[in-house]
Image (cartoon, rainbow, N blue to C red; front, side, top):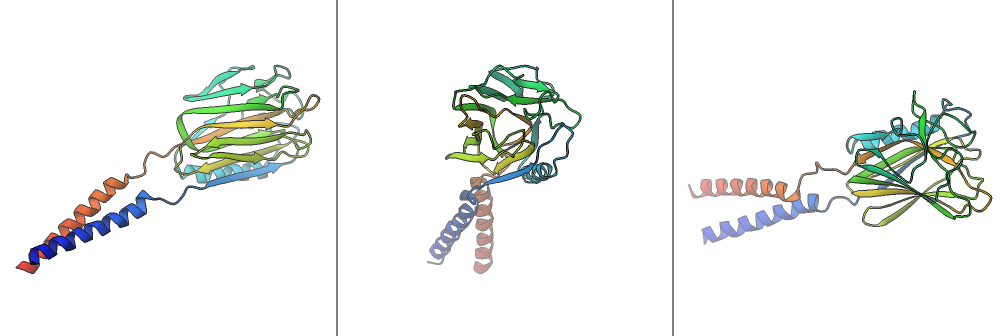
Length: 260
């Protein structure tokens, strides 16, 4: 009976260990989409001050850096000119849909026109200029990732509020998500980013909506940063195995002392 009692107690103890470990690791806290945004008024050059945008970028970098390595896309090595599909970084493809071929679209260089986007990279010149097509209500910039991500951010320049347009960020983390980016009156610059810790996001789409036949909002995107999906979280079964064997060894040792 003593032996049976020990086995029964051991079984209950191991089951309890399994419940505790699986409750902690098998059901982690539900991931939360956290956004970062800061905007600055109209600028007249690429070197203009943007304290609010930079502060938001710094907060994003701190949070995203805690999830893994931050990768940067500054477009400085990308070929100049328009495109429909372009590899902008290893494993990252940008696709433009319903964008026009006028006003130096695609990868642009320098501050060519006022309120049409500009570079934000320190010491750089190039950026992505988005030129929506008139009379088509939606234009899309899609970034697809060969290795899924869990954080994404970028600078947006000369995104305005007075052109009857809106810009939404769309992605899927198991559920379709839509985040809104609000432009500045008169353009300027802003940073927008989000983290979604522990999720695997295969693509991020920037969708411009609600422009019409005589108005559209031309803007720039630069210094995109992203973090690949986490690969270093311990597997629950591995930790469970270590915990269970440790509990088993401890109970057997105690039982041996009791019989002695």
